[in-house]
Length: 352
Ligand code: PA5
Image 1 (spheres, rainbow, N blue to C red):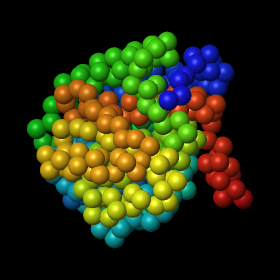
Image 2 (cartoon, protein in one colour):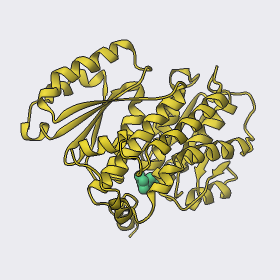
Image 3 (cartoon, rainbow, N blue to C red):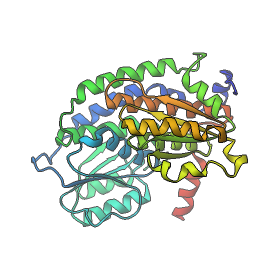
Image 4 (tube, protein in one colour):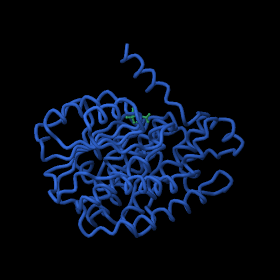
């Protein structure tokens, strides 16, 4: 296992991603306050028939996480829409939440235009850009969040206003958000303290050392798909590493057979299994048996468990562990975690 030299942090993290990671707890608190102080015109007691959250990459993940936090408690269907077009069921009965940190993401902008044309109730969440301009031009509600950070490091600003608004629209029954939030903020602050570079032994440092030079394969119960997607995305964007994710129980019906070839590759894959009590006991059993079956074909299997008591705290504890792991993995790969040059270059080329 590769170990991390603290001097490398200063050398590679020249844009100070460490500062943003360390402030995740505070950002969640501020994001919630932004959501709570947003004036909701549309609180007429008529719940929407469905909720569509549109967004890509570091913004779209806030939709996945909102959906995961609400989980089975949701009183109406929630879908996360990643693309240019929206389904025909988007109508005047839909709450369409368009999330784009920059406000300039092509897919999200086209989808919000289409949703508006189909009569949906639009809500924007953005730091500015064309989405904010579109909302202003059409007199649509729009939550404005602080600008100037990478989208993926703005998760507290993106996620918390969505949860606050869904809570105020009474779409999450039996939800005591304030106490869940208090627990979450305290836990995230504690994790940030435990995961600081000056602490010699920490779970993210250990995981990063294990994953260095390997292909990370993130497996999770279906209920934690958002977290597995976040881990993958953070390893892609922060660590500049390929990563892959998949969920139980579906992978037991196909992917489990693939753990044989190409053997030179499978032996270089390290599996991370994300665990949380939200998984049905049957899924838990499947995860344990699968680990035994595939382990000989892998570089190793490591279990990572959520922390905390409320679902919100548990989900965000796993997000924090993954974010910090991707950060230390970036440093081990001698990468600056902040810039995403290919994503930006692609966007530039698409504009011409
Ligand atoms: O992390 C990133 O930079 C990307 O994944 C972006 O979030 C993605 O391209 C969408 O951009 P935005 O979040 O500004 O809508």
